[in-house]
Length: 503
Image (tube, rainbow, N blue to C red):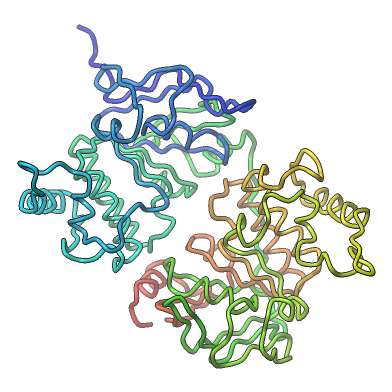
């Protein structure tokens, strides 16, 4: 008797973009109840493969089968009709619509009318099965980030998803929210759904999944049961093709003088504010800023960089007060900045690579004299930093936007660290990077600490903060909810502070 076909099968998937072979004869099988961890470095082909499954791209070769029946995913609506749902990193909600209205948008009603009672019943059923409860009349724009993600998952289930793709789903969650999500995903698997879980957090992959597929340079290089994996180092080596040695964090060292002090800072706009922020950074330490996205991290970074005006309070750099801070003053005072938006704020992607290395100092010596740029000096500097930071690029004059995410982040670090800043402000410096690029960034941050500089590390990755920081301050609704020393820090305590619990 022939065996039943897999619930989902992707056979021989190939996809080329110009000279780049993004997927090269990739095969994926899922059974009902499977939770597949899909891993790979940046550019390995994970997103392309999932976009093919969800109907965003057509494969150049290969086929997709569900329950043994070939299907053509010509667009996302077709994918949804076949039971494939996808929750992206960036949510697609209508902020001014309620939870229920977001679920009903695009759904056919009964006799041409919206079926509110039927939708409520379906929402109650899903919530009861998986613990994904949300009040139906709450506006989507008033939901927390974790609740918005819950709504996106509810949407997929509401539309009948039997195969659910999640792309970096815990990047914006507190530890408590992540645990709640994992409980819901395991409940879905127990009821016969299949889940594809994309994450750079290897500990989560080992905790959640039943098996793991690894892509490298478009090829599937491993497909193994999670129970057969010894540790995350083994996964990292399979992803990169070589063993990784994580950077060593020196033991607690004696803190140096105060290099930056924020005293009673209140600032903000665009409907969000910082309230009475008091924080110090000493030489030889990394201070982390934890918090769920949207709780004032962007405003804090903008204040320290001189982009956001201070409404009250004052800033001191190396003991000197900064009056009416602006970007030029803060840079001159010794602030180096690696911004969260590397493609928008940090770099001009349409410019040649060499120009981006001197973007904030092009009008200064040695790159400019009597108002004229020195291409020789600019290119000498760029060439030296490319070599020092092992940046992979086809030349000095290629368009910067053609570089990979990891290499773009190396450009930002190379540019800022060349001037030996007293304080390095690093906002989400490893977001979206693969394990080898993450290790490189961590190595640079630790080098600043070892050399006696100070690092303010703003990150939504709690593991990263616990690994690198000497102290961790938690932002909640624009206020510092608490500060904990690394040696006494617990994931649970920080997670509670991130969710608004009093310290």
